[in-house]
Image (cartoon, rainbow over all chains, first blue to last red):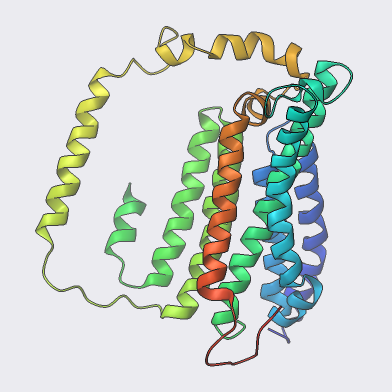
Length: 140
Length: 169
């Protein structure tokens, strides 16, 4: 895939837009359609496009698989951590009302953090799985 | 429906994977026309996008022609027909489509619709239900994905025994 100049240019144009759209879906999920899951998948799709066009080795250098594994765990921990934080602040598990001074702000903060956790875990898991498959296939 | 049959009939796995992608895209369009934008979004991104790529990556490992099956497999056909018949029979008891008196519209849905904007300050009700009221379920979903990732990494991602390009961590 090193000589496809059109593919490389178009991919270079597209990837930032896809990443931006993923972030939009992530943080605008409160107001429009979307949320952590979709955002994570779109984010992973952008990086998979990068891998397909520029090769697995470049992608591994840009996003080290060790970091991905830590991110996978970090997303779940963020989710669980929000739940535990609300527990420690005197509410129920995953009861966001106590996270901020008034319940609505607490709910907002909780939902934002939880969706962020979902997004991180989904994106890094999808990428890890793809890297694992592609790595076995001889670096397609 | 036509696409589903094509998926089953095709012997070329590459074409079959493409067909499943097209099927997912159609499903997404169906969800949009049912006003379920969030679900359609997920279906388009996961079903048509990521799943197709992962299937193609798998094909890179296993080759793209399906081996010719032995025998005709009447037993699987019988099982599928009986299960499908039972499901169709069960739909007789379901409330009419878009019936406002259906149990699903009378249980917790009115409370979500009336109270969730005030309680959570989040205009998109799907998000508030997913992340707040049904927070446990979404946590479970995240853990499931995490577990799936761990499983694949344990099976495929570790150090290679044959050693083509070394380990990666």
